[in-house]
Image (tube, rainbow, N blue to C red; front, side):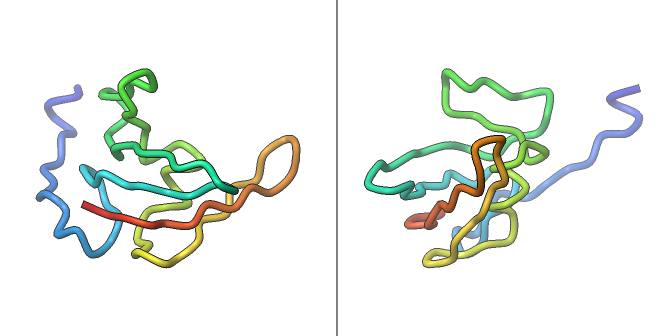
Length: 85
């Protein structure tokens, strides 16, 4: 079923966050680095987050300098995108 419904993605150009992008964000004064991957490739300990996760969804389509806002149980968290590769 996975192969039947598979879709190919091209590597990110580095201008806009998409699947396969390596993204650096600033949350308060902490820098976070992660890669946007499909749901079957998620590995948080290796910095791979799903494009379907709240942070992944918030970052998709954004560019350097944009902010991504994520609603959490503790309130809204804002991440500033500082780098996209």
